[in-house]
Length: 288
Image (cartoon, rainbow, N blue to C red; front, side, top):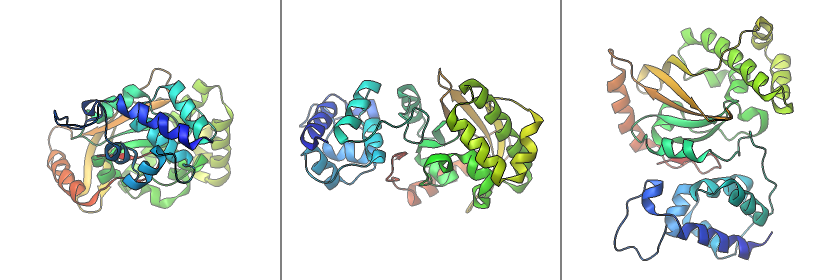
């Protein structure tokens, strides 16, 4: 890797971004044309000292997760992102993996929903990035890689993955996940990543093995959920999703249905989130 060139490239991309473009307040007294180093560090979920070392061409080789976080923070294009990975001496991650480049349009929309729990996920339900309220509602992004990054996989193999869902919802959610996975498999042409996930689920989950042969298929675009929060109890919410043009990523957001106490609980969630939730320091970072 070329640490000096890596640092120079980071600085050049930092200089071109205006604070308002990434949801930060602007000021006429700013001493730099673009973002400050500490602002990039916050956006990437890194310490300021560590980011300073990177930009100065010092320190250890950044991890793949950190390179992915920096690419998102600096709003890099696909070509710029590939160049950053090359300079870091890291292999370019697969298009659909947990280190996938968040679609710029999805990221822009996510940042325009500060008062709504929202996240960007892959088509296999691996969370790439989520905002503060989504973390307060769903918990932090798990530090998982490969097939285990998929929430579909964890739903059928890890009992704790279901703790945030009301027990009465489990059977319904299982059927929905299976139908959605079949739709994704068909759209992708049954590529190796999807085939590997299906094989693992069939071999490890009797529930999935029973549901998969039913041939149900439906892309998940909207659903009503009863989520369980450790402090607020059951919260009934509408979960909506917007798919990217190629279907590889989805923006999820949660809204309160008319009637009931869900709107009030979301307001309380914002207070709890501001007290308890910080920046998740990983490739799929939490947005403030």
